[in-house]
Amino acid sequence: MELPIDPSQIDPDDIGATQTTLEMDHEEAIEHVREVFTDAGFGVPVEFSPSELLNEKVDADRDPYYVLGACNPAVADRALEATDGKMGGLFPCNVVVREEEPGRQLVYHVSIMRIARLVGMAPDDDEMADIIADTGEIVDDAFEAL
Image (cartoon, rainbow, N blue to C red; front, side, top):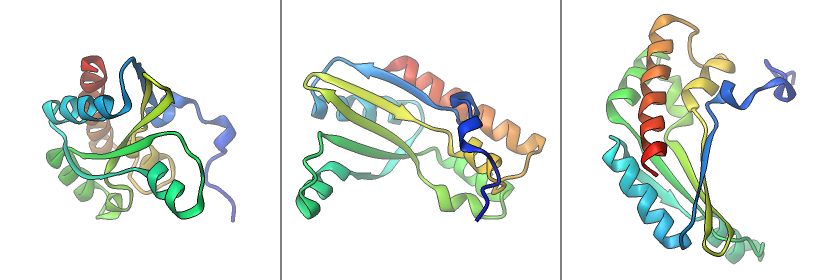
C-alpha cells in the first residue's frame, strides 16, 4: 500500500500538533485537563488508560499514560456533515496526558480535522477550512488555559 502522503515530510503544524507540560501529579493533571477542555466547550465521552491496560495484559511496565476523548458537539456535527460521515472514523479528538517523570506530565493533541484532510477523508474546501479553524481556536484556548 502506498501512503497518500510522505510521513517524513509532515510538519507538526500540518497535523495541528500541540503540547504543553504540566508540573503536577498524574491524576491531578488528568482532572485539570478534563476540566479545562470541558470549560472550553468539549465533552469527554471516552477516557481510558492504555498504560494500565498494557501493564495488566502484556506486563508492559509503562509509565502512566491516559487518553481523554474530547468532542465539541457543534464542530463534530459540522465535520460529519462536511465529510459525508467519514470523520466519525477518527472521533473523538484525543488529548493525551503522559507522565514524563513523577510530577511532570506531557499533554499532547493532534487535529483529527487536519489529519482527515491530509489523508483525503475530508474535503480541501472552505467549509472544512472553517471547521479546522474553529476547532483549532477552541483547542488553542484550552491549551492556553492549561
